[in-house]
Image (cartoon, rainbow, N blue to C red; front, side, top):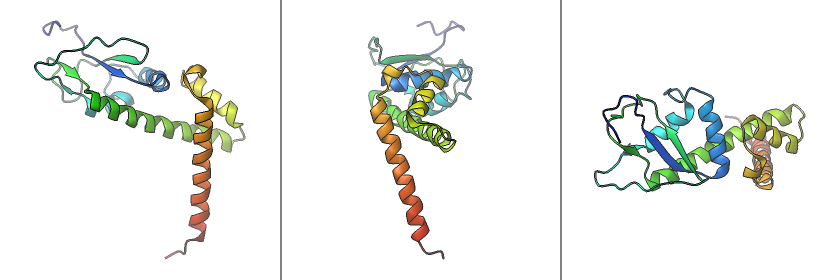
Length: 166
């Protein structure tokens, strides 16, 4: 690594499920990657830290890994020091990203279904709009998740109607 080369950009490699990897790539490309305004980079930033002095980087390759090139100026980090995401932080980032994905998925589907779209078409359209290969998702799992969310939403609405107002 040439720390004196001004053209050098830090890279972070993280392990992701295929669905999250494709969704994240779509979201990174929504903005200029070199921007701190990028939503995914803002979410990733708290999970990044300086690599320990004697840390030996493993070569991370494979379809489950995503390497992200960071902006030259990235929040409070000194870009002359080596950055990384620990295994624990990668796991936590995956959880955060999955929750974000699910919320966006639910919001998208609720809006389309409210306007009369069928569930299967809505899920397929979500995949197309977010550049997610249909093979990367478990359609039945997403459908079941959406049904549970809608059922809980309806249950909460029914409960709130029964609660007395103060």
